[in-house]
Image (cartoon, rainbow, N blue to C red; front, side, top):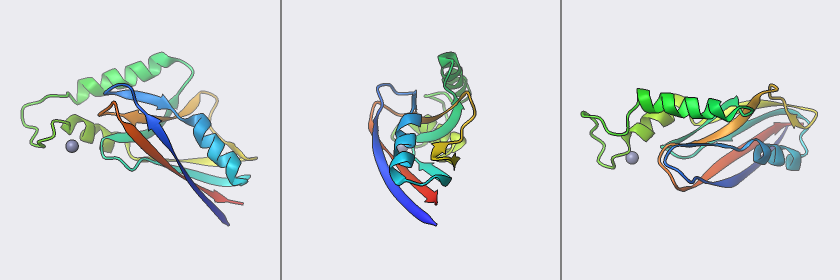
Length: 136
Ligand code: ZN
């Protein structure tokens, strides 16, 4: 089994934002030369996350972010963390810091409507995404 590691930067432009990184991840998979295996997409930040969801209708992203904002308000009596970004930490843990996608024929084997998103919850910031491709 071959392992190929890479990373790329993501510049968010808003405090809460979902950025489609499918093409960047596919770029790493293509560069790896691995045709069959899987890829792990990992976010090394405590106030951001990685998720897979619909990238065809941008209203889905809007609705996910507005639902998270309603469930986890920016300001809430009871938060203790002094940085004032407790909502971002909560959202990060709720969504999760990685996704795994199967690779078939050198391509991400995603569903028709699926894309991989970097989720920013405390932007704007310069972020990093780690990618590990495994297979043959
Ligand atoms: Zn914090």
